[in-house]
Length: 215
Image (tube, rainbow, N blue to C red; front, side, top):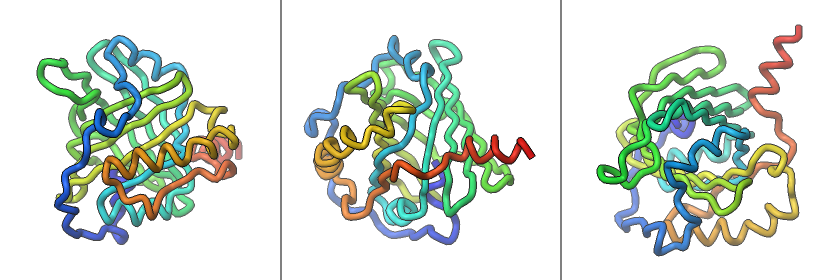
């Protein structure tokens, strides 16, 4: 989302000329099928690790404290995506509608369906990053998303690795998975020198909002 391209941190540079490797070449988990997308709505998903392949995205990885998402399948053709992040100590919230394309017309899992809404520190603005999303899953509590977008005119990708809420605190499992996450990121030609990794302690935007509502 546009959290990866916040104003002052935007650095517009040319991307590497080398083409990314495919999911098949890098042995990514199986791509989710249309009939299984309803499972995404059963839990909230916590970002545990992330990589980017464009300079502004790499820079912003250093400023994210936490990220949690909800996905609600409204019907077999559309999905509501809500992302709540803490960036430089402030809430950044995205509400986006995605369409589920026909396999005959697109090899992506989801496509952006109209402009979404971004709310940063209480101020809402529209955005449209031409999002295309591929979702992969190796286990019921694991989620891997390859996010394609055009960020302020610069094409880029983000690799997002999630665990279902609760499993994101399984430090032993996450530690054991780090090398595999890095392998996939390297194979897909992401920058692996800088990455986001959830520290197991940072609050979520949702909890901060609920706490404020009590006073």
